[in-house]
Structure formats: structure tokens, C-alpha cells
Image (cartoon, rainbow over all chains, first blue to last red; front, side, top):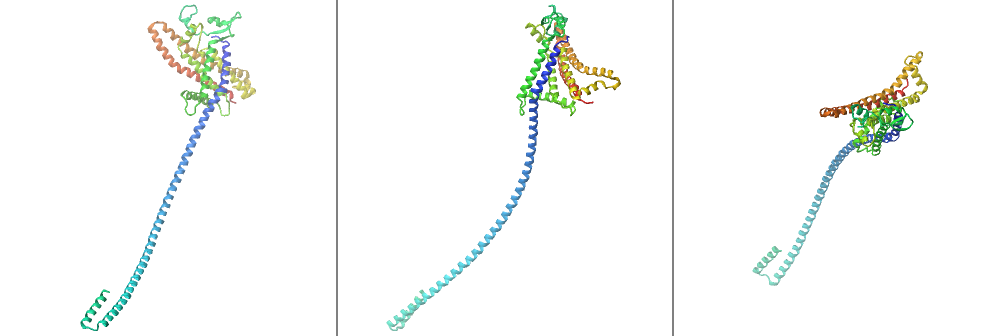
Length: 159
Length: 283
């Protein structure tokens, strides 16, 4: 076991290696490790944030849904109301229309009856005139008159 | 196996395995590779263990190549298993620093230094698990006489690393505390100003004990482990029965050694951090 210059060589090598390690090996490695640590921390924080945001969004969504439901119920109720009022209006309109139609139909019927009566009256008078003229023409004949009057009556009945 | 005198003995085998490939200045002034332990010893301080240095630097470079490639291809979303493992190592280094240093003592160099020390020492120790003959035999076949592949079983490597830690302790003590407070710390405790020489002696021993114990602990553990691997390896030449026994022994020791090498690397890193945190503390 000789102590010799190897001792000095090793000492110098040691300083050289430590310097090299400090200069070229340690910083990139440690920086990369630090960077990843930050990345992980950021990722976890982002996940946390995302979860919170999701919770908030879920609450909002639930609120929106309940609001929408109540709105829908309101809309349905008002629509039902309007529907029934429309039906009611239609009913009253139909009733008044019906009455109007009936009234006009009655008036028409009365008119027709009136016209028919007038026609009948003129016909009766003309028949009467015709019958009178015939009587005048043929002189008065009892049997003939009877037949004539019968004929007249028949005509009246037909008219 | 290239025994010292061409003859294969257990002692020669063990000696061969414990000798570094040494390049240095011979006593006559010429430079060259030492042939044998005696020649290496005769070179004194002006010699270098080429194998230890090459393996030490090579393993360090492998470490940084892996780190750099992981850092460049860093994927935050789909990390590979290797990336996860290396991230864990970075975390271990950072956590060890954070748990030892007080909040006020900010030093950006400690955590990278801890990482380097831990992984580098671990890699050097890891070479211990490669069967003792494989790589030395390969190099002998290639004409290189000695090849000791576990740098941390070389006392120079262990103490050299500890020396670097010691220099850092002194540097940060002076930088953070300032020369005055550092000197006070070395002289005015534990016994007050009337015992300054004694205090200084005590504190100096305590200060010097830090790098020495740090380096020698690593060296001692790894050297002993390596020696036991080599001793087990000598059993292979002693017949089938003892050879088989050696196989079992090597397996058991290797499994146990996985714990030892990891623990030693971790202890080395932790103590380095603790010593440096003491250098940052004000009393």
C-alpha cells in the first residue's frame, strides 16, 4: 500500500466531477423534476377547480330546470284557461248565430206563407170571376150550377 | 496469473491481485511501469496507480454519461425505469442535504456533491462484485501485468476522496465562519482560553480525524472484502470439493457484499454532508 500521486489525482478528479455535476448534471435534472412537480400540482388544482365548477354548474342546471318546470306549468295553465275561454266564446258566438239563423228562417217562412196567401187570394178571386162568367154564359141551371159549384170547390181545394 | 517468480503459489496469487499497475519514476530517475510490488514501492510518491485512476475516472464518466442522457431525455409523462431510479438518487442526495443542513446554511454545491460522492463511490465499490480473476486475467492476456479493478480498495483513492472532502471542510469553515471564528473554534474550546495549546491539539486531532476516518473506513471495508474474495478464489485450485465450497462461499460473500458496498457508499456520502454541515455551523 503505497501512498503516491494517485492521491492527488483522485482529489483533483473529485473536484472536477463535483464541478461537472453541479454545472451540467444537477440543474437540468432538478429543473425537470421541479417542473413536473409544478405540473402535477397545477393539474390537481385544475381538477379541483373543474370539480367545483361542475358542482356550481349542476346547481345552476337544477335551478334552471325547476324554473323551466314552473314556467311550463304556468304556460300550460294559462293555455288551458285561454282554451276554455276560446271554447266559451265560440259557444256564445254559435248560440247567437243559431238564434240569428232561426230568426231569419222564421221570417222567411212567414214571408213565404204570406206570399202563398196572397197568391191563393188572387187565384180564388180569379176563379170566382171565371165561375161567375160561366154562370152568366150558360144561364142559370140548377143541375148545371151544382156541378159548377162543385167544380169551383174542387178548384179552391186544389189551389 | 503471472506470479512473482513464474511459479504459481497462493501467496504469489494474492500478491498479484493486490498490486496496482504503477507508473512512476524509478530510483535511478527513469520513468516507466513498475514490475512487482517492490519496484512500485521504491518509486515513492512520484508514481501513479494507472489502473485505479483509469477505473475511477472511467466509472465517474459512465455515471455522468448516464445522468446526462437521462437529464436530456427527461420525460415528465412517461419516465423510464432508469429515470425513476436516478430521480430517486437525486432525491436521496437532496433529502440527505436538507435533513442535515440548517435552513440558514444555504449551499447549492452540497447536494450535487453528495450525489456525485454516493454514486461514484458506489460504482467503485461495485467493481468488487466482478469475479476477481476475470478482468486481471484479460489484461494479463493483453500483456498488462497488473490490473486492480476496484479503485476504492486503493488507499490512495479512498484517502484522495477524503482529502477533497477535507479541503472542502477547511474552505467552507473559512468562508462561512471567517478565519477569526474558525481559529477561535480550534483554540478556545473545550477548555477555555487558559488551555489554548491543549485545545488546539485536541481540535486539530478531531479535525484531522474526520478525513482520515472517512477515507480509511471506506478503504478498510473494501480492502477486507476484496481480500476475502481473493482468498475464496484460492480455494478453486484446491480440488473439486473445496472448489465447490469456494463457489458457495463466493456467492454468499458476494450477496453480503451487495449490502456492504451500498452501505459504505451511503455512509461516505452522509459523513461528508455531516462534516460539511459542521463547517457551516456557527457556535
